Image (cartoon, rainbow, N blue to C red; front, side, top):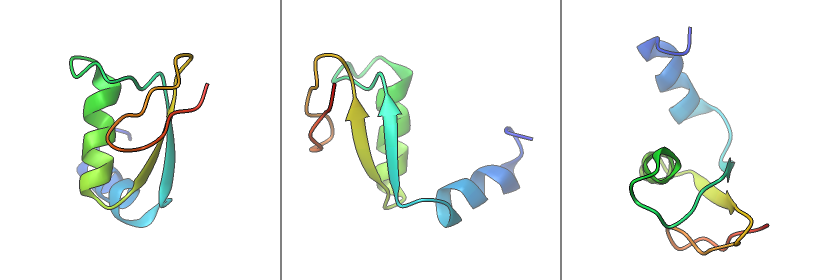
Length: 63
């Protein structure tokens, strides 16, 4: 279900305008960083949630 291209397309184009990404940091090697990048390219607002509350992709982080 989750690997189905139609499901992924629907998630990226139809569901939710704001996404909280738990564990998102400024470390470009982490998967969450890439996920946040893709979501922003699809016009989604991201909210980084991380103990260090870093600003990532221009969005303020929250602990």
